[in-house]
Every structure is written in C-alpha cells, then in structure tokens.
Length: 161
Image 1 (cartoon, rainbow, N blue to C red):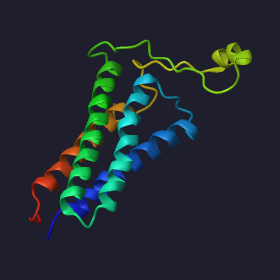
Image 2 (cartoon, one colour; image 1 turned 180 degrees about the vertical axis):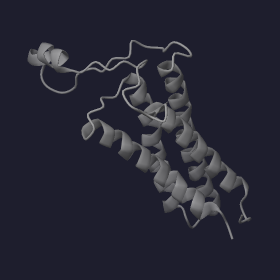
Image 3 (cartoon, rainbow, N blue to C red; image 1 turned 90 degrees about the vertical axis):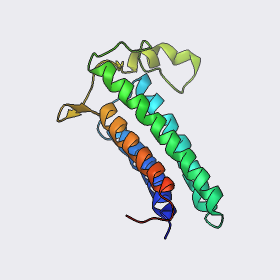
C-alpha cells in the first residue's frame, strides 16, 4: 500500500494548522508578527494550494506525488526561515531587516495615525516562548520535521512502516 495518501494529508494539515496557530496567536493572543514572521507564513500559504492540487490529482499518482513534494518543499522553506528567525531571536546571528510591522489599509490622509497606532514588533525579540523555544523556533522544528516526513513517505512509496 502506498504512503502517498498520508504524505498528502500531512502536506495539507501542516501548513493549515501552523498558519491557523499563527493567526490565532496574532488575533486572539495579541502577538503582532514581525517581518520575518510574515516571511514564514508565505511558504505555508503556497503549500496549501499545492497540497490541494495533490488531492485533486489523486487519480494520477505521479502528479499527486509531485504536488505533494512541492508542498513539502514550501513547508521546509518556511521551517528554514523559522530556524533562521529563531537564531536571530536567540542572538546567534543578526537579522536581515529593520523588522518592524507596517500599517495597512486606510487612506493616505490618516497614514500618520496608522503609523502611530501600529505596534512595532522586533524580529530579535521573542514575544512568546514555551520551554525556551519561540514561535519561530516551533515553526522551524515542526515545519522542517513535517517536510522531511512527507519527503520520506514519498521516497518510501510502496512500503508501509
């Protein structure tokens, strides 16, 4: 029996759950994302339609596996960014940007009000951690782990463990 169905499911569930957690921490928990937090979200946003295409192509195993692998790569990229971001938070290396959020929406007439009301979130300060691991660190670990698991499932096609 093929491992492709499980790989497909993991390729869809991982970015949906991690993005859901990111948005929940932002809108429910009040943790405003910094620039590198946003960078981690974009590959997950790309992984979701790729995984959906993998499900849509269930009738063609090769095509489905290709889209699943592409989703895994996107998930892995998010994880790599997350690990880099965690290193910036822990002071292991400097970040690449000024890392502050920018205001969105509204007209140019009230841009100063938006700028003044926008919370500044630094990339080198972890706003939350559990067991000494920040959200960026968890995204890095979970995303890289999931990407490797998905690719491993695809490589082990035809075998069940």
